[in-house]
Structures are given as C-alpha cells and as structure tokens.
Length: 145
Image (tube, rainbow, N blue to C red):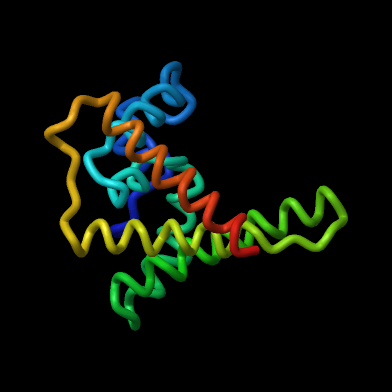
C-alpha cells in the first residue's frame, strides 16, 4: 500500500474543501495570506502546483540535501518552469521568475530559521506582511536584473 497522499487529499488538507469545490480559491487566498509566517504562506499557496513540486522535487531533493537547500532548489525549479512557460508564450528569452522565486525561498527559509511569526497580529496585518515579502522580493529582483 502506498503512503503517498493523493492530489485530492492534498488540496482538501490545504484549502479545507474538496478539489474543485466552491470556495477553494478564497480558502487558499485566506489561508496563505493569513498564514502566521512567510514560510507557512507557501504551505497554502497554489496547492495543485505545490503538490507536484513537493512530490517530484522537494521530497526527492530533501532525501540527500538539507531541508533548507531542498526548499531553495524547489522554488528555483518552480521559477524556471514559470520562466519557460512565459518564454514559450512570448517567444522571448526570459530570466526573471527563477531569481525571484529563489529570493522568496531564501526569505521563507530565513523566516523559519529565525522563527519569525506574526500569529499575534490580526489576519489583515498578516496578509499585508506576507504581501510585503512577495512585493519586496519582486522589487529587489527587478532592481538587480
């Protein structure tokens, strides 16, 4: 018997509702932006994409590398796949998502390592802080590229 969680089970665990159910998008947004840390933000963001990244990148990579390194590699691969998708649509060389996602991974890993938590703040403040991580890392990526 396999110990792998199915996509449907994973999505329900992350959103609180079955795959494709009404309210799944709003639950994902509330849970991710309302997360008490930037690291936990990613536990709820885009559960279908994260299911496959977890299964095919994060778990295999973390079997031979430290957790923090596997997280950064997983984010970098996700960014590279986003870059590839945009390149295929625009027929133009692009290298933005890979460094941006890698920077967000570093922020997530550091927030975990430093035990940064905004649990004591109301949901609206937690959402704003998580948004600041995303927009700040976006800005820094734009600045350096």
